[in-house]
Image 1: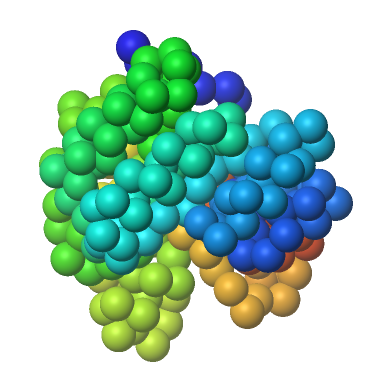
Image 2: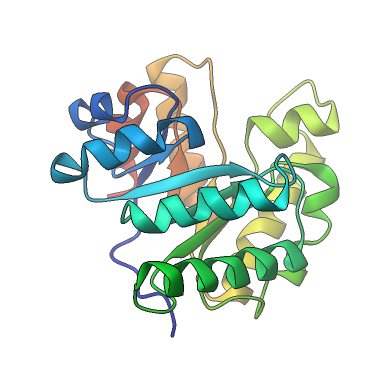
Length: 224
């Protein structure tokens, strides 16, 4: 069964501590760390409309990864937010594990989405064309932010390699039939961050990974 998406979130905010604080923000979607999953279960009655579990691909052993995915399904999270080095095969692997977790928890098959951020890492960005058709759970492909700037060793956010990766990201997302999600632009003034969001939208991105609740408000207004 295909994941049926609601309107695409304009702002995606990582939450490393108590997820209850995210209720005070205006972010469309929050990204929970594995450590905050138990607190997310405690706050299920107060959950915001969109919650994803943030997983760094390859950081955990298979048994640990399977248990994190099972808890995400048990906590009624909307999906998995996958970052780090990855390719289309990793997307397929997470898909298979989620199917097993949904069966274990008695959930509708395919109800858990996957948002992937391959274009925040240079080797992963070279595999962007390999994500199409790998999973019907795919809800977003993203990147082109701080991570890829660091990965490429760039000194400016307007360098030609960065513009190339951003264009590849938007094209790969379109080829996969999902929206493109812009990577973070941290450390900017409110005016500069708003300008970055406007550039993202003009380049074809549908939403943005933000770092603070204030950035979420700005992104929401620009991607409206």
